[in-house]
Image (cartoon, rainbow, N blue to C red):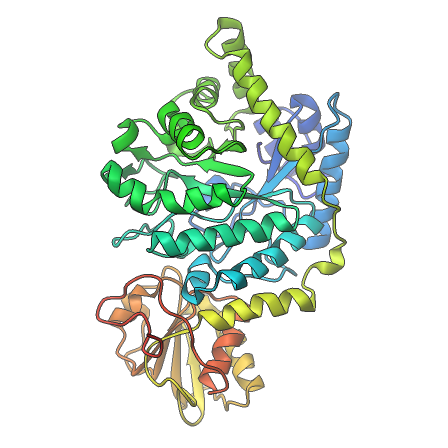
Length: 500
């Protein structure tokens, strides 16, 4: 499952054609499918603040209509292949800071916000809405939910992508997200197995080490994956992670002990195992062909984003010829893939009119409203009195203007200057970005920075989506409660000032 350059299956500009030539020796995505008889394609989008952006050198998604036309074209190309099997089309639509398709969709809050809400039924309904929208756009597998449990030190690359630090609570949230997505006809993909939440490194750049004992790993990291498998997740993504207690020094992607003995043997997973991006540093330890064979022999069924498609294919063929890769292993992998493809294709594809529908907005808004958390301040009535002024670092202009409008819609007087200051901070912001004079500080990502804030009122939304900020405005205006509880500890602060 590689990526391709260009927003159309058959018509691309010169730059995209050059990218495809370098990647696969063809000009268009459709030609790539034909040449390599691909099992799938991943849709990608590069954005500056995305922690996964390094593996996405291009963007081929713009809006729902364009994505639907692209996926229709890709499926048409797949139907011309001898097997005529549906193509598996994936994307990383986690919501929060890792969201590939942003324009026109109903944006869910981050996983951490769902963890703060603590209501799996709301999570399932929101992810069902997300699944319907992805299905309408022609996406068949979403590389979500993130099943990683955050450690106390956290993981910078995971952060708010996780549901929190409680493995039992995470397990219920992961299962709910899986049920929601798959109930709408989109395969869910649990990631990053065996767990990226207790690592300090970033597997995009290095091989992170999981130093926990085997018992600690089974207690803290495994439950959300176990729950997701039991909920019927169609896909599990292997992480480029060194689980020392199981197979020291070997990335899980290339570990038979992790991907076969644990995932298949202990967790009884029968679906499709796919690698994390093979263009990430730990997977480039070997040439593309050798890495492909190692990943398949470990127990992966699909290779995601190989850096050289031709070399990966040639490596597989050479492995078959030499006997280092058994034909039975490939038959097993392809059987799983085809089973998932035809099962997914059995759900009728919705029309694009479901994208951004009122029903979806209601489902997602309910989750947003349940996630807003007051960590310090009042628990009823307006959180600030009198006119307000919303400030934010320069990179948060969109969030600031969104909140200004939402506050005005709630009847709050907003002034350009001189009002009670509401300071917004978000992903990547540091204590230096806080305002010492703010009456209220709102964190729209990991709430740890609130430990440094001097404001008398501290609030977390864990997300900067429009619906998150709309829910926040209702709380600030005193027209809604803040029922959320932080799913991770914040130094010196309670999980909630208002909820036991």
